[in-house]
Structures are given as C-alpha cells and as structure tokens.
Length: 169
Image (cartoon, rainbow, N blue to C red; front, side):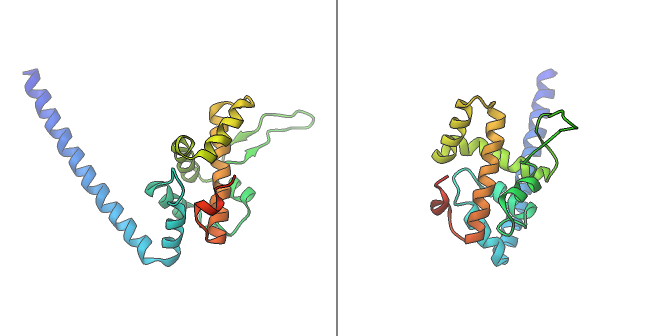
C-alpha cells in the first residue's frame, strides 16, 4: 500500500515539475522578447552577460531593478542596492556598520552572482582572497565583491564597453 502511495506521489511530483519547467520557459521567452524589442535593454543585457558569473537571471534582475545603472555614481548605486555599510553611531558611541536597506532583489541577485563569480572570475577571486587574508569574514568579503562588481557594471554601462575592457579591478 505504501509503495502505491509513493509511486502516485512521485508521478504527481514529476507532473508538477514538468508544468513548472514549462511555465519557466514561457516566462523566460517573454522576458527575452521584451529585452530584444528594446534597444537599451538589449545593449545592457549584452554588456552584463559578458561578465563571467553573470547569467540570464542576474542580468535581467539588474536591468529591471536598477535603471540608474550607468547614470549615477558607484557610491550612490551601492546605497541603492543596499551594499553600502550604514553607521549605527550615537553621540560618542561608534556602533557597527551594517548592510541594510536598499533594493533587496538587486542585492540578492548580486550576492548570488558573486558566489559563482568568486569561483570563475580570476580578478574578483583575487579581490575576495585578499579581503579574506586581511581577516574579513567570508560573507563580508562577498558583499564587498558585490559592491565592487556593481561599480564595474556601472562603468561598463556608462561607457558602453564590455567586461574585458573593465576587467582590471
């Protein structure tokens, strides 16, 4: 009896997985159509995906969440993305700096991209390892890499140049 339920459950889960995969493909095609129909989006998408570690989801999230990319300074962008450490000071007391606020989806997309980028992008990997060797915790170093990457992406979009021209960190 239990094996029968397990088999039925497995079949239902496989059907559900197939429907979700089909829906995902439909949504991705619609997003690609929107990107291809807009010259600015298409240009940004090509530049963003030229970066090792930034794929479809990250590029689309950056395009959707950060229209200011290429038009503002890197410090302001870091604050918009929630990647700038904010002081928690009061009077003479100097508190810890925390990363908070900003656009959560953008911050999450950049952080997730850094997990891959730190492995496959030699320039960002060297920066990450340098921070860790100075005693920074891995997550702090990862957020610093995300902030650095956002600054590089900003310069790429502003000057309309690919990753290879901005790879020197």
